[in-house]
Structure formats: C-alpha cells, structure tokens
Image 1: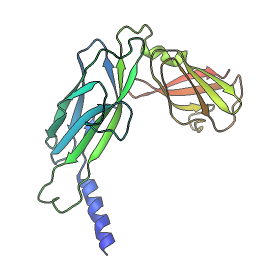
Image 2: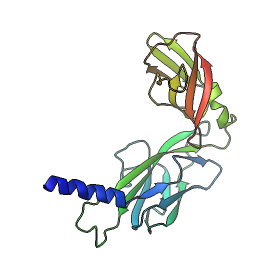
Image 3: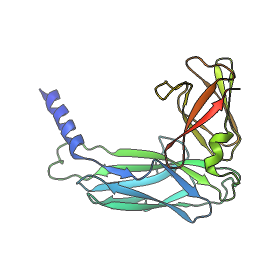
Image 4: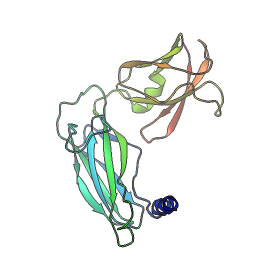
Length: 229
C-alpha cells in the first residue's frame, strides 16, 4: 500500500512541475564578443532557484571543482513561475587556442521551491547540461562547410573518420539506405584536426554511398552524402 502511495505522489509531482528549460541545445561563444547570452524559462507554475556554471567535461563537476575559464552571471538566480532569466557567460582568460574551437559544458541546476502543498513531498534538483563551443573569430572556414570536409573510410571492421577542419563535428548517425535504415554507428564528436576509429554494425563496403547525419550550430540535422574510401 505504501509503495502505491509513493508512486502516485511521484507521478503527481512530475505532472505538476514542468521546470526550467534552456532555449537551445548547444551554445556558440564567438571569440570576438565580450560575452555570450542564453535564455532560461521557467515553464512551470512554481518558482525555482537556479545555479549555473561551466565545466571542462567532467560530468561530476561542481562550481567549486570546475576550472573552466568562464564565469556565469548570475551564477545563482530565482526564476518565478512563468518567468525567465538571461544568463551571460564571460571568458576569463585569453589562453584558449586561436586556431580551433574549444568545447566546454554549461550546467544549469533547477531546484524547485518548496510550497505549502509540496513541503511533505520529495524534492528533486534537475540538472541540464549542454555543450558550449568557444569559437575564435579568425577561423577561415565557414562552419556550414564542415560536413563536406569530413572523410570516411573502411579499415577491416572499423570506420576511420577524419576531421581536417578547425571545428568540432558531431556525427549523430551514418546510414547506407533510406531514412528508416538503422545507423551503423553511435553518436560521435570529432575534435578539430583529429581522426577517430569507431566500430560499426551491419554491412558496409568500400565505394558504397552513405549519408552522414550531423548536428549544426542550431541543433538541427544536416545530411551529407559521402563515398566510403
């Protein structure tokens, strides 16, 4: 009986609390700007306390342990139900590479406020984490041209992916048939000027045409046709 009551309480809490959401799935910080901005919206009815920070890739990081060279303003804020808050991210050092992108992660922790109706229920802090790309302003190649620069080749039971560009490249799928064909690989992010060897599933052969499905700056899918070398 107690288990049933607990399940009902959890379901009711999840249905009644929508939470704070970010207006994008990834963030670009142009190197020629003093700061980058991002919008938070509280889509629920209850106020929330929000804490934000940037980390270098450690999912277990905290504001105290992170050494990422960025400051979030404000680092802690209260957002009323239905309200919003703009965050400004500022770089604190000029020692980041100038010839390529750098990747970091923006963390937003949403702590719902306690009310008279929720004081005796479990409260959960919800954490959202998105990629933050610091992009120097003097990169010669336009970011939209990156998918065409990627090369894909076969070596036994692995795929060799090469990224000769100064940008990060996120490949979400590689298909060799129609839209309903399962991807041959899991999502992979290629660093600038890097090469990755990844295992693949299914049947592939040299000279075959495949479709790379990548993610652009706006979080949308981009399809690029390639021939396997």
